Length: 240
Ligand SMILES: Nc1ncnc2c1ncn2[C@@H]1O[C@H](COP(=O)(O)OP(=O)(O)O)[C@@H](O)[C@H]1O
Ligand SMILES: [Mg+2]
Image (cartoon, rainbow, N blue to C red):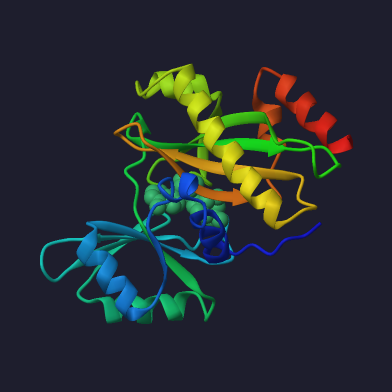
């Protein structure tokens, strides 16, 4: 089944659950006033196309003194003086599609590269069957990138937590629990949904955040892991 990718809709679905609301970085639909407001509230924000972009059209903005903003997109960075200029530039770059503006998380890093984790949740064909975590890995951003879609490395989550010195299995278990709650919420909304691949961020204070849930997650990275048990479990769930 195909569900339209819509980050704004998904944010609102999650936000309606108190147990999930605190796991979401504050988000608004991008408008002139929401951008200004968020940039007053936070030092850094992220602009993302509502319908997803595999990391490409994501823009990071950092307040830089009173009248300057540092704009970071892919490997490029420029400085702009006001939010009007930012919005104009964005319209030129990326047609008219809607954007969201989101508080930027200070993601945990491995060797100065941010990383986040992908957690796959699945359930069997019968929509009354429970959601399970069937796989996970960590995505480390490539040199110079702030998004992890362009990765330099795909490694087991426990290895990433260890390399970043931010936690151990108990942190992974906690992240998995949050992914399961989020999967459950999406499953209520979409009864035919059977798999969700979550991007889960862990910030430098070890707090866990839901970045997004993907309805068509890329499963190829599991082939890169030495341990093939997750790949087998994921395939099993797809068939049952
Ligand atoms: N609020 C944020 N703070 C810090 N990094 C973020 C934030 N949102 C996204 N990212 C980074 O950008 C990547 C892509 O964002 P995501 O919301 O997953 O969009 P896409 O649909 O392009 O995959 C994330 O995996 C994460 O590495
Ligand atoms: Mg993503």
